Length: 390
Image (tube, rainbow, N blue to C red):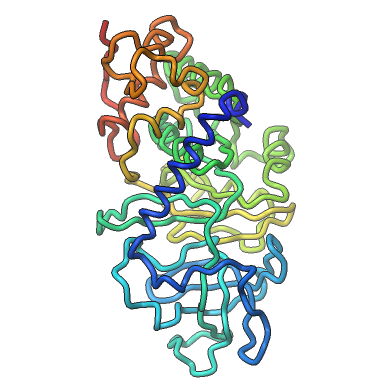
């Protein structure tokens, strides 16, 4: 994806080690030590009828899972009501839930009816969780000491924003990109409500948006400008292009409330049409409609994990070394500053700062880096002015 990615192999290996350490720390004390088990160790079938499944929705006390006879081939029409085996619900949790949407799990039919729910669905118990290949998480807004894992095991992240109603927050986009880079997955940016950019925006704002689009494209990110509520939108070149990017992949779909994520999903014939307010004007009001994450099969190929709009998005603090690797334009320059542990903040002879001053790294992206590093980024990705110092 990003053209910088293959130019700094040593740096990528380094951030991979950091990521593994971070995951190990996150899961410490989280689940019973025997809950996580590699699929190669799963005993399928047998007397207990064990089967592999994928978590497709998570609620407070239970989850919905769909059978996955072959890795990546989820039968989302075969839905079971599940809960985690009680023997594992004994440790202090470092995460909000024991499982998250996208998790691969080993289940057994619930013959003892431990799942108490009046739903016309077969019931099962989650016995094991496969190690996660990637995860997207934020700090739980209700219990900051816990992580709220939004989704796992995705191939790529689709960040949806709108030019207006609500206005695009580039800082929030950067925070998502940092998560994608730290997890080693590709990121796609979709900017919705393109009609409002030209009809309801000041010339200065239009110019700024076009400049920002060029900045992200220059970094190697896929950036698409769309209008999801347009007539015959699914036939537009940008949506056809996005469809090709989604096909055959598991894509996490996320962004701020009201930007039109569900409208975008509905253009790809999902098996479950996503709820959108009937009021035609709701498209421009920025109202939140999705209430929980769900794993959805697309009629044109691939799966998406649709997540609720996030009004507040904070993640675990990252040190300067790890964070700087998550800004792709920094990578070719890392290790070339005067100080090995340079934070690119106020250290003398910092190459990153020099490239910013020369205009080779955008001032916006550098300020975004500082905002995350120093905790100056607001709840919704807003960044207060962080002037460059001489």
